[in-house]
Structure formats: structure tokens, C-alpha cells
Length: 474
Image (cartoon, rainbow, N blue to C red; front, side):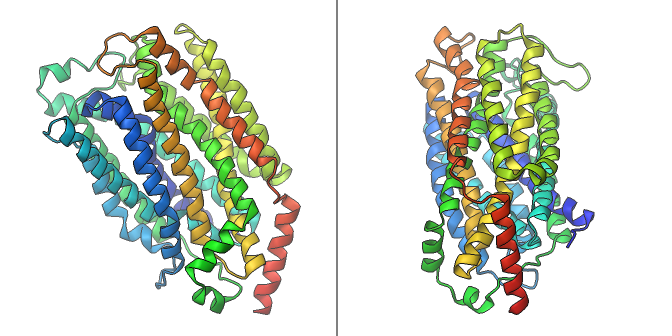
């Protein structure tokens, strides 16, 4: 069964919305908390770790809830409708800087960031699970996953294109604080609290509309082989089946490695340009800094990688192409360590190549989780789509949590001080390592784990055929 183009695009809108905020969290939030909000990198890193671990623990719970949801719209689609507006509103208050002291601001950051991550879970886990019930065909799921990630990178591209100019614009219009205005230099984004909260509000409105369109345009089709068993299955039984699922464990570890790679590079990128590159460059028309150009180039290249994912993986297999892409990303990332501030063209070229590899990998991960759903259903007659897909979200958050926390802790360990005009050689070394060797090591972890992944293309095809036979008999 072929999915219509309109529905593929509609499915992509969901991750376009999620990615717009996720990239703000990954690329800008540490910068915002240290440079605008006013807390130290170490405190921010600890907060990221604690909140993301708490949030990751909530993902399986959300998956269990979604699996047991019954509405006229299906199990997973309704959450896109119910949480579209809360998603946007909580995102805005997360980027609001209250008139409090240091302790008060830190408490506020913990509360709002925790709430944001919980709302993100409530919409993103059901959205991810939707892939497993839109089609039962592995190749169709590869295509849907590619649409998802392609639109995710479009969302990230729009965020990078709009956020900095919007922050600077709102700061210039609404903020009269001379000290804040003086931070709007040629190398960095404005540090005006007013500019940040209003810019995020604009992005939030776009996200809400996209979630509604995703809900409207998609459909749930795949039903469990044994509907009665699925309706009566206990949570304990679902969790026990999941923990016995060997491919799930392997993919979890590999996912954490690949997402740790992205999180470390994303979290340190703005610091890399602000404190190491330090080249006065701003496009006169759009007002983009060199760091923003770097991010935009990366997102455009991610989309090339996503476009290659379905045709190449359908021909050569997901496992093999995933491992090749991660090995290439590791080698290319390591080269960043030897680059100097004068090597701008090399930096941008490497960003293109690394981002193509990273863009290629992500759709494969989501598609492999759908294969694992089928694998478990064949073995247990229980289709725990939400629970299994929640683990993919959980691995994403664990990888991001460890990555961004490591970024904050390592900045502090290497002697980085957020208010210093010029950083020490030790701090700059730490920034360079986090752009090169540390992400490369994360790629190697992902590849080693994937060596043990047992679901080959041949095996997945056999599983799909056997499940279809069972559905026909049922």
C-alpha cells in the first residue's frame, strides 16, 4: 500500500514542529542560560542532566498511556491536537527571564525546563509511535521516516534562519537597556531577554499550527494481529517483553551514541564561533553571524543526507549504510581539531560533509524501531508500538542530556567563564575537543553497538510476511 504524498508531508509536519524547538534547546539553550539568563555553565549542565534523565524516565510511561488510548481518531494522533497549544506556551515561558536573584532564576529554570520536557514527551512519543501504525511495509516506513527527518531539518533550518534575526529585531525595538544593546556585536546574537522570549513566541505559533496539520493529514491503519490480547495485556507483560528484546537493547545503545554525537557538537557550536573563531562577519541583509551561516549550512546538508537515506538503505540495507555513515562522521569530526580560525572554508566544507552523514543516520534509526515493533509482535502477539517508540525518544533524550551536560561540565572544567571577554587557552582547548574528538568517540560507540544488531533486511522481510499472514487469518 502506497501512502499519498499529502499524508507523507503531513507526517513530516509533526517533526518539523518538534525539531524547531528541539534545535533551540540543543543549539541555543546553554548559550541562553549562561549568557542571557545568567547561570553558570556547571549549574546549567547539572540541570540539563537531571531534568533530561527525569524526562527520559517518563517516555516509557507516555508510551504505555498512548498504547492504551482509544479515541475515534486512533491511539496516537489525538496527542498532536491536545498538546499543540501547551507545547508553544510552555516553550515561551521557558525562555522568559524573571526579575529574580540567582537562586530564584535557577529554581525557575528547573521548573520551566522540566515542564517543557514533559509537554514535549506528551506530544513527541505518540507522534513517533504513529510511524508504526501508518504502514506495515518496511520500505514505506523507510520513506515515511525520510519525510519525517527531511521536514525536521527544514524546521531546524527555519529556526536557524529566523531566530537570531528575530532576537536582534525584538531587542532593538523593545529593549532600551544600553548595556544589553551593546552586546549586539558583529560576532554574536543579542543577549536581550525581551528579544529572546518574543522570538521564541513566534516560533511557538508556527509549531502549534504544524502539529494541528499533522493531526489533520495523517491516518492510523495497522491493527494488532491479536486485538483481544492487546486490549487485555498488562503493563508488566509489556515491559517484560521489552526487556527481553535483544535488538531493542542494541539499538538503544547505538542510538545514544549517535545522539550524543549530535548533542555535543550542537551544544558547543556557538561557543566555538564566539570564543575560538572570533571573526567579525555579519551578512548585511539578513543579519546572520558566521555561526548562524554554519548552522544553516549544516541543516541544508542534513536534508541531503535524509534524501539519500531511503534509496540507499532500501538497496544496501539499513545496518550496513548506518555503520558506514557513522564511521565517516567520526573521521570528519576529528579533523575539526586541527582547524584554525582562518580555515573558514574548510570549517564550512567539513560541516557540509558531517551533516550529510548525520542526516542520513537519523531516519534509519526511526525505521529500525518500527522493525523492532514487528519483531516483538511476531514473538509475543503483542504490538506495544508506543512503548517501543518511547524508547527511541528516551535514547534521544539520554544522549542529548549526557551531551549537553558534558558540554556544560567540560566548559567549567576547562576554565570557561561566561562573562570573560577573552577565554583562557585551556577553555579554548576544551571547546575544540568538543567539536572534534569527543563527538568522534560517540560515533565509534554507535558503530560498535550496531555490529551486534541482528535484524537484517532479509530477516525484516520475513517478519513482515509472517505478520501479514497472521492478520489475514485473524
